[in-house]
Length: 126
Image: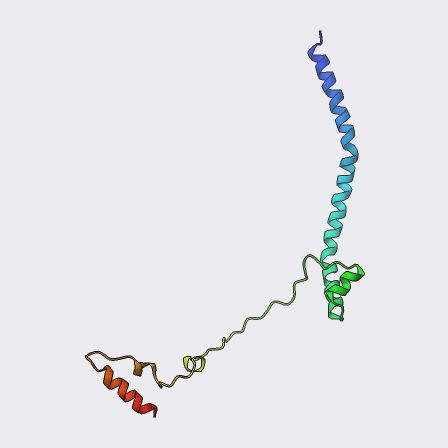
């Protein structure tokens, strides 16, 4: 009959075989992380060089045809400046012209004065 010691020995042998199989993967993982870090460091200069080529007259399609992939992130440009004084439009300038000179003339007043106000407005317009 097998003892607890025998079971533990078999488990250690199986675990050692698994660890041995993992060693090449661990080495590749380390190299892969380093290469990904180096590639990430090149993203910003690559994007700047791509934009500079476009500014010099190359199109993105031409650069792609040559083998230069469009960068995932374009470099940040100058921030847009906000205008300190916003353009203000007056209601007269933005509203379309109408035949009635004032909107108040078409609104009837209280106490039955609507006909008189409309008639007066009509005589002013010509």
